[in-house]
Amino acid sequence: MLVALSVLWGASFIFSEVMLAALPVLTLVTLRVAIAAVILWGLVLASGTPVPRRPGTIAALAAMGLLNNALPFSLIVWGQTSITAGLAAILNATTPLFTAGLAGIFLADERLTRRRVGGLLLGLAGVAVMVGPDALSRLGSDLLAQGAVLAAAFSYGCAVVFGRRFKRLGIAPMMVATGQTSAAALILAPFALILDRPFSLPMPGAGVWLAVVANAAFATAFAYILYFAILARSGATNVVLVTVLVPVVAVLVGAVALGETVSTGQLAGMALICAGLAVIDGRLLGWLRVDPSGARRSL
Image: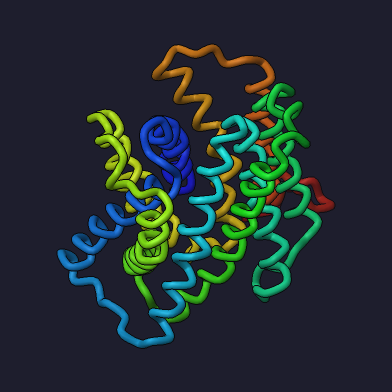
């Protein structure tokens, strides 16, 4: 599920590049969450998923929409107008570090450990190695754009820790995804209409509209169903590991679909990311550990 989510979110960077050529930031993000909300409401009604009606639950869904969609989507897309996709990937990959710290403070079952921190830092180093020194050389320039992407990563970390409550409330992952995208659309729409004035812009071409719909349907609607399912099953820190997998997916898709060459540095970065994920997961280390008699422990 985590790999599938990384594929969907990896594709969203490509969609954003296409859309930014014809649409301003707030309009782009509003279309993404609004179309995703329409799709998800169709799935909710077709499947008979219970719709929460308690004011407290609705308020929690609205907060999730702000923290997990409206703020980070807008900040990342705005940041991409000034910095490279590679540098944005490195900065976005700090999400698990923020999440691990917040989860260690606020979630009793996800306390911060040396193994988890070590694995996160190893994965982040892998992202940096894979993206390469060219992107790292831009660190320090365009500070506002870089700060925006880091703020988005922190917002994601807050959202994923906050989102753990929905399992306790008995809210289905599809309903959480529907509620948060609906709230994000309602939050963003007035700003997009006032600041971007999209009705005064030229009509985008068919390619842009295809990217808008694909971004909403696959990289948002379906992706967030997976996201909340993983969050309910595996916890806050594990679900945001997707942010270190996204660059791997981007490189592999480029190699398979576009015939791009995979460099030695990219392969080394992927190896570091895989090692970091293995350290965080812990099961491989437990399997390799032996008892005093020399026999491997059972899982």
